[in-house]
Amino acid sequence: MNLYHKHPLFIMLLGVLALTMLFACGKKDAPALAEKTDPQEETTTIVELTSDQYTMAGIELGRVETKNLGTVLALNGMLSTPPQNEVSVSPRIGGYIRSTPLLQGLRVRKGQALAVLEHQDVIMLQQEFLETRSRLELAEAEFKRQEALQKDNINAVKTFQQTATDFKSLKARLYALKQRLALIGINADALQESGITGTYTITSPIDGYVAEVNITLGKFVSPNDVVCRIINNAHLHAELTVFERDISKIRDGQRVRFTLVNESEERIATIFMIGREISKDRTVRVDAHLDKEDTRLLPNTALSALVELGEQPVPAVPDAALVSAGGKEYIFIIADEPPSKNKDTDGKSNDTSAAAKHFQMIEVKRGASVGGWTEVLLPTSFDTANAKVVVKGAYSLLSKTQGGE
Image (cartoon, rainbow, N blue to C red; front, top):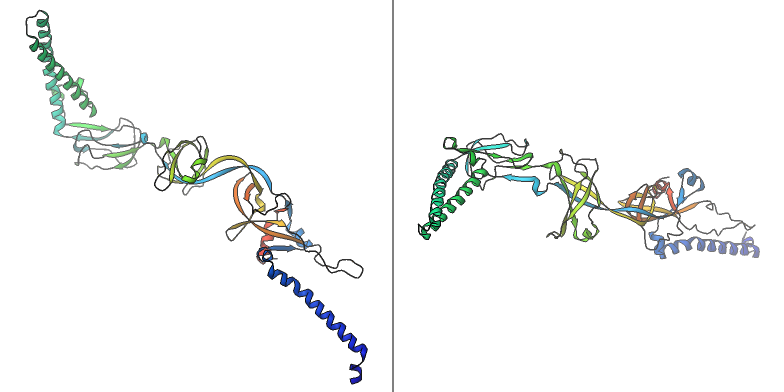
């Protein structure tokens, strides 16, 4: 037995076997070493599909194309009323509330009675007007008489001038009292001694809805108090808040698509006014007219808007090419397949993965989506001209990266 182990042929066979095993170990460890020293291999996600898996996934390839997609700017805002469509109603003369039909939400018409006030100042104003009117009639007669005497040089010039001054003063005073009575709705031309009243009516200056009521019966209100607030919501605006960095993108006439809070219906508006001042929070106010008025809408309702900035050529892929994972967006492209190094004795490849397909996962940023195409922001090293993108079956590849079969 010992002689057998010392046979030269046996020793030669052991040496060849040892060399073969050493060479095989070196071949196996080489790729692992390269993987550790190549950072690209550590950060790149490669998915491999066999020929059967490729067919079952229904993979279709395409390219990143240049499309004229409409870019949009996302903004927040609210519905607002123009200043002329919102009024705070106050009394012209202080008084006590005698009666009122006001309720919050009540629809009112222009000129409709809002409240009846009473106060002795109303009586005194009418009295003063009637007394001034009587004195003016007497002053006018005296002025005409002095004027005639002046023409014949009978009276003194000073007497005529004083009479003229008194007449003009009373005339101005009567006109001012007439305007004050008109403010509280009393027709001075028709006023007679028997028609003096201690009340006057506050009326609505516009059509609209009562948004706020601040009075009760018997309450005294002064000209500084607000009786009620009325809003006409027939011409609401979409008031948008635009950050300073984006204001240069906004133009008059741009189309705005917006949705109200807790609504899915999309509405359309058109920008007509851009603020000319940057606020303390570095924003600018932009107003847009609603293309379709809706009286059911309420002021101060929050909204989310997309301002259409216009079309421009951008890199884009079909919507189906984009997949989402972990809050990020990805596409898949065909990756270079590793070359086969194992060959049979006849020179033919015996690599069982020769028919496999390899795909690389690329992170992108999503942009505007129009007509089934989506704008993508690609890495700077991306080969747009040559890369073949998976435009169908991308989610099958994503499932493979997450441990799916």
